Amino acid sequence: MGRAKLPRKSTTIDMTAMCDVAFLLLSFFILTTKFKPSEAIAVTTPSSVSSKVAPNKDFVLITIDKDGKVFLTIDDKQKRETIANSLNATKNLGIDVAAFKSASFVGASFGGLKSFLALSEENRKGDQLPGIPCKDSTDNELIVWMQVVNEAYAGTKMDLLLKGDNVAKYPAFKNVLTAFKRNNIQKFQMVTNPENAPAGSELYQKSMSGEKQEN
Amino acid sequence: MAELDTSGGGHKKKGPGVKKGKKLSTRVDLTPMVDLGFLLITFFIFTTTMSQPTAMKLILPDDKVKPEEQNKAKESGALTILMGDDNHIYYYEGQLKNDASNFLSASYNGENSIRDVIMKKKLQVRSIAQDPSDPEKDLVIVIKPSSKCSYKNVIDILDEMSINVVKKYALVDVFDIEEQLVQKSDANAKSSSN
Picture (spheres, rainbow over the protein chains, first blue to last red):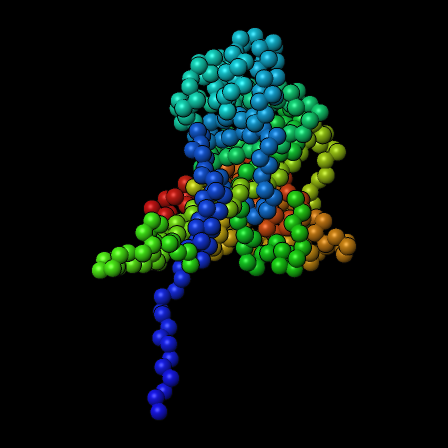
């Protein structure tokens, strides 16, 4: 008696479905990846356990680079125009409002602002710019800047951010604080990298027990 | 699987004697393509930065408040932290003695870390607290960064406050005498390490 022959099964698997999934995921990751735009001012921020995400709109950002130079970034174009106009009116600087409006940050003294705005966007590199003079309480143009910023943002929401470099020295930070205090700004936020609470610390125990951080 | 009709459209039937062309399989081996796909996926997963920068809040004291109206720190609950050059850190409890005998050095992490100092201080304040409802009422940490310390040091210490859940702390300018002491200790630390 002959036995019934079992049909031999092919070992090749249909890859099409897997290929579909792979490329679907691939296109998802390609589309969601945001490459970091090369920053004009290179700053490496310290890390903190704070879990609050830094605001990304309606902010005014003060950057302190590694040499202690201070830069000011205002994200709202409309406010930039207001600020340029009020600076022209009060200090008689005669700056180009349109150029100021399109400049992503400010990094020069009032005297050097014209030549700063004359530079093209690519040539405005943090390490080659003088920064806003902010040496001590007498020679501190940031006080004036914060004043006009305050006026421009009067009545609207403003998030004041401070982004400092790891190796910037404390006096630079202190001078910025002086400028804030002079304008009665008591609240601000410092941009940091996220970090986990160290194991065993009180905050760690709190977060383990499900308590939310209060800030 | 998707397959294409490879048979020619026009000639359905070939004449007798005409050899049938070998039907080529349209199945393509997709394995290398899948490999490539997953390679790219891993690349994009690793390059995607999911972590966004965070922000820590700091509220500055009002300088214009008269000293009489400010709350005075109790000596028993006060801890002063001083930051010097090159990641050196010092502290003293209560008031600085004239001979600076309570001026001690610590480190940011590792052995004898400032975190241990703060935790010890906390326990000490708790043990002598009079008000059981708020045992840490008297604990005040005064942070005095010297002109040599870096921004990172300041953030680290402020972060340490939130790590150890210290409710009352202040960022204060360093006194001249303390600054000199810090510089002297920095120089000592430098010469001993060389």
